[in-house]
Image (cartoon, rainbow, N blue to C red):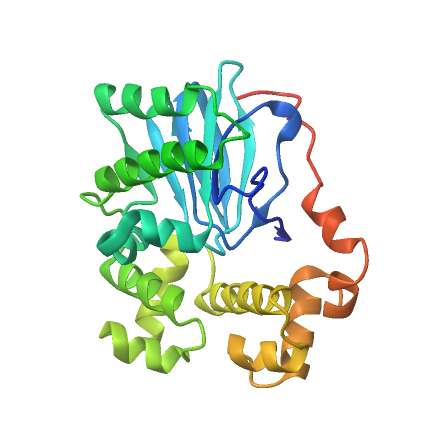
Length: 274
């Protein structure tokens, strides 16, 4: 199960964006640091989520936390999808005190008719690409309303919810420390996490550390300092994990066209719709 690192595409300087999906821009299985919501406005589809498969229909609201890989596998002819993503900092600002709880709420939430119509209307209205403040206001309005609705629903085990909240805040924590923090034993929380998220806890923690490492290097830190701050025991460990997860060494990633090639890759639309 390979997944590319593909940051959420945001035009200009805006810290969030709403994309209306078209088949030609179907992305391969990927993950990124930006939290993302998907609004299924019409039709039905199947998503790959880690090692799991999720069938969705019109009215479903999907949540991808940072580091969660996802891919659209197939869809009906009338499928209509809006994709909403924010930078982590802007998401925290938009949600305020509810930011921590949002990470652990439902991965898939079923919207009632009025709520679906309200959120779809926000997405469907044209965005003024040159007006960053207008774009961010629209995205922020959607984000707050969608997470307000999600906050009342949970479709994951309590240990998974607690683990997500903790590991997103502190990906450097060891599994034993996480277990103590969420009040469970290591094997129990690992089992529920894998069932609910479709990834092992180790894989997910590793991705979050890699995302932190990339962000720190982009901000100007040297590889060694970034690796240590991201939670790796050494740069050699970071290098091994980076190579294994992204398929190239850090130096090649940051100083060649590999990163751009990953970012700009698309998959063809499935030949046979569901």
